[in-house]
Length: 110
Image (cartoon, rainbow, N blue to C red; front, top):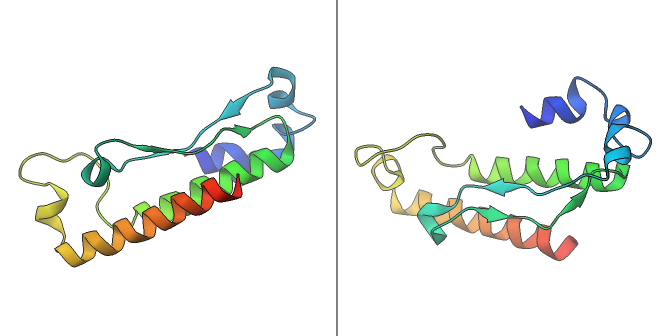
């Protein structure tokens, strides 16, 4: 997973300000599925992978959004396994509230 590739198993210092990402000037965004609620994925501002601060901020945003989105089913769905069939209206409302709040917090911190 992304978290493992960017710090948990390789060491972020290999990629950050003095590493590979700095040489390439990479930037990245975090995208989280939200089609059920808003018709498309939510995308964060760009994070600068060439600086340690930007890399850590992006990883932290990814973790926070993944945790919030993980409150309800993730993965492939069809007409028989849609979110509305797997969760109550209250669960979906709570999940959206948490995801929305986390997403807006990340934008306000950017």
